[in-house]
Image 1 (cartoon, rainbow, N blue to C red):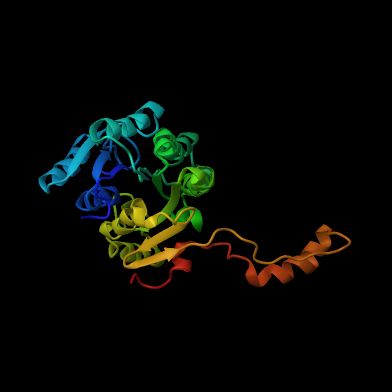
Image 2 (cartoon, one colour):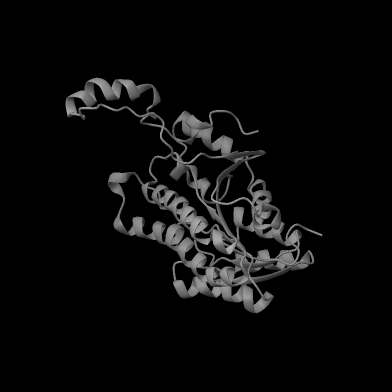
Length: 304
């Protein structure tokens, strides 16, 4: 008996990479899986039914149950069809994995409105659309698990990814609110920031020695390492785990803190711009985040 025996899981972006590995492992643990993937390119262009169907075929060949859904999460009706396929084909929906994503990286001053909207639509709005469609079923059955994919690009920051970083940190805020609003219905909501080499991370620039070193580290982190945490969070074993942010880095699982006060300073007569400069900032300086911080500064060691 697998940890997900009898459960139904919908996974967006499950035709390739991390999403595919999640679908395969969920199925091997007994879940029926809706494999959503319109098969678009890395920037959201085109479409291909092949990736989703291949994942389904592999699950079925291994004795599992799966169904391919090709809808775009950008479209509320398309997102709703993912959940409807789960209910109509397999009788219920127990977990939603919001993994779908695209990248349109460019340095901030060159970013177009189109590239901003496209990435926000897929990551943040898509996450909202699919989660919203599943919510009535979760409320009715008084159970359910949302597993949203965030990124250290949002949690920490990254160069050339203002659209992606904003969307991924927005997902954390969305997950928090879902967890709080849905707790009374027995519904959980958590985030995972994956470190893994995939089609998306393959687009990371590798021009400087530091960038090349970072990419080589990523290449050692395979997509299948992310899936076990997803299976756990979708299972009844995780009933007490909600409103958390995890990261998976090869064989290491990290629990992230949320933004909390680091230091405070009070001046009874109030602050002026001059006293902020002369007293507050010097006192705060040891705890200020470095201005150029990216995930490589937070995780400077080789993957474990």
